[in-house]
Length: 190
Image 1 (tube, one colour):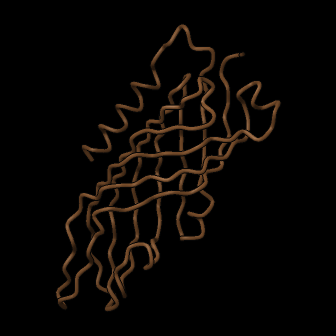
Image 2 (image 1 turned 45 degrees about the vertical axis):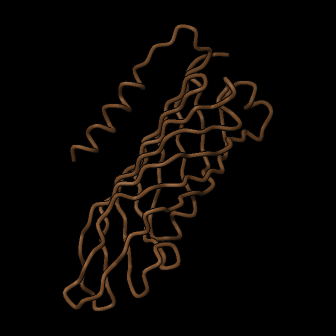
């Protein structure tokens, strides 16, 4: 709970930043459509000023075995992510890079229907490219966009041992990625 409070406080601090030279400020909402196919969801709530965007991402996901790498286990994740992106273009389109921190409460289930809850903290770097496909929207920095990205991550989590002797082992190095669909609402005229 303390970690979530820290992330929320950082989000609110940046949200309140006043930059008199800023041409545009915008609110953004995104989702990763693939998360709905893994019995989950992913909603990104963001705020941006020129060159910078900050995002708070509540999510839920059931990771398939080929991602977590543990045979005969299910991993259900419920958590929150925090992204801080730096865009190389002032209009917050194109290439970006920035830190990402993810906290999840994982429910691990083995093939005997035994369940254990475990915390996981991941930290890494998010690299992506924002594309606003429609010219008029690009001019006003308002409207639909999509964002392919990848994030190499380091996991801080203890492996889980079950009473029957089998164990779920976390991968120390993981990758997260996708193509987010988003909508940007410019709060100032260009």
